[in-house]
Amino acid sequence: MPTPTENHDLDHCLACGTSNPQGLHLFFRPDETGVTAETVCREEWVSWRGLIHGGLLSTMMDEAMGWAVGRDGWTGLTGRLSVRLLRPVAPGQPLVVHAWVVSSRRHVAKTCAELLTPGGLRVAAAEALMVLTKDLPRVAKMA
Image (cartoon, rainbow, N blue to C red; front, side, top):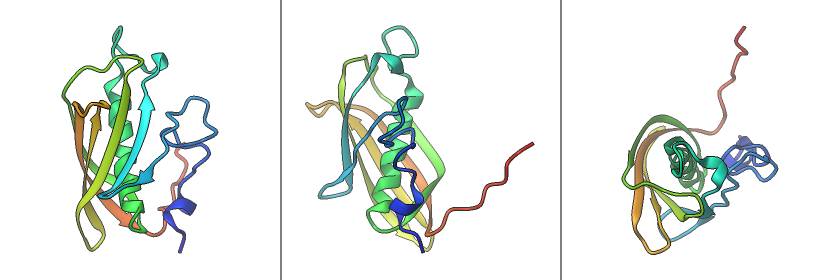
């Protein structure tokens, strides 16, 4: 069975790929309760003038929750995602994304994530149900 790292495209992933020129380049490391990554919001991530796109903030947390289940040896595919955007985020803002597994049973894990300023101010939070698998599903190309 492939490991989560073998299932993940670590070069081209939009969130954590090292070779994706348009990517977010998040580098996750394990911590006491889950995983953490740091980033500085780029001007290219703007939606409304002066505001980082909420979809990118959601992507950061979604990716982090996938890495949190990966820490336990699973590949997590997002089954349901709920996001709360609590405060506006501007380009140049440093952020910390943290995610952890709340519970898991059978092939589903409940996960949480948050985006924080370096001072600990919470700017966004998310919950997800992750479908746990050891192997990725086969995807047919659509015509």
